[in-house]
Image 1 (cartoon, rainbow, N blue to C red):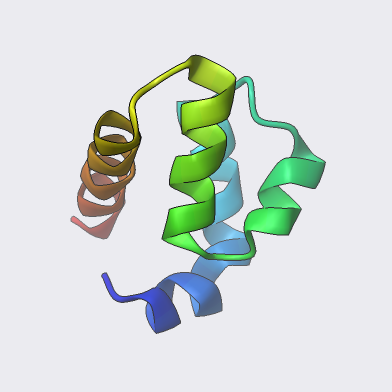
Image 2: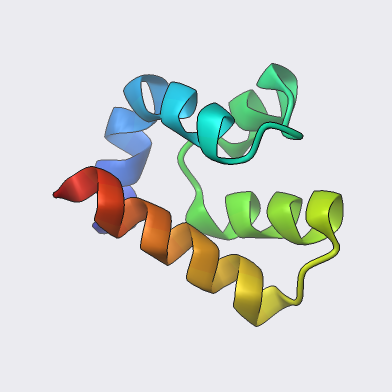
Length: 67
């Protein structure tokens, strides 16, 4: 899923992201605004993950909801 599609569908996808990463607040998810890199950065910060692990988690999540 490319960034334009993610940005366009972010409002609908926010709930799924909240379920996946419950430590992220609604305000934080609003600030992500469909930017996969911002989402990965938040996951990295909140969960203490490496940049690569956070990016992989976001990519896996995107693939799972795309199916």
